Length: 67
Image (cartoon, rainbow, N blue to C red; front, side):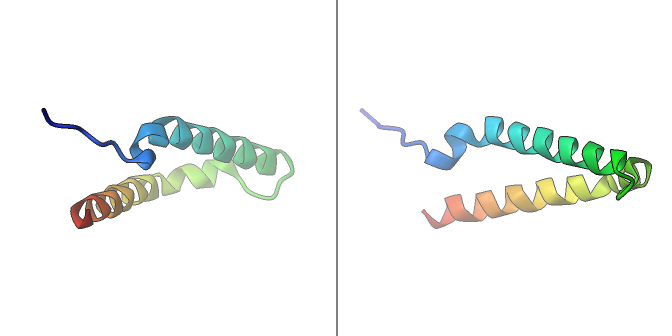
């Protein structure tokens, strides 16, 4: 019989990521209301989200490979 061990990080990564995205969206919209940042210009930087997701996956993969 084999036992599958799940890492603590993988069990809550999805909900945590969604929570951080919602918090970030709320902060950006609040800053937009105060005129500190302009959300229209931030949307031009959407490829950075792909880069961040790729780096996060690469980091996660390298940590799994070490164990």
